[in-house]
Image (cartoon, rainbow, N blue to C red; front, side):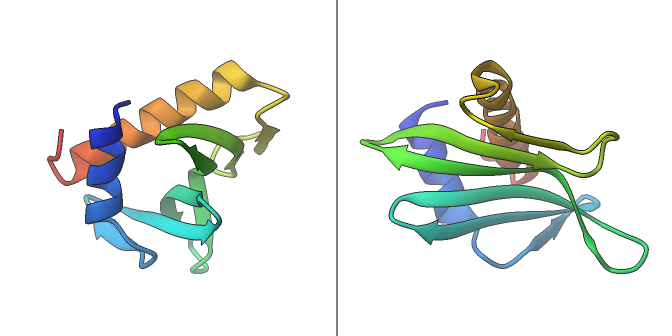
Length: 106
C-alpha cells in the first residue's frame, strides 16, 4: 500500500456507508489519526455484518492496523495487532485493494 492509495481512499470514501456491488463500504475518521475501514454486509434484520472492520492508525503517512473484527465468518474474529500482526497487516492490504477496486481507483 502506498500513501497515494491511502489518499485515494480518504478522498473517495466517507463516514456514510456507500453501497457498491452488493456491499457497503465505509471509511470513518475516529480520532487523532485513527480510522475505521469496513466492508459491511446487510443482515436479514438490518444489522451490520462486518467482513471485516479494521481500525487503523496513520503514523507519519504510514498505516498501522490496530484491530480487526469480522462477524461474517464463524467463529467470529476479534484480534488486536499485538496478537496477530501478520494477519492484520494482510487483512489491511486486502481490504485496501477491495476499496480501490470498488471504485476502480487502482
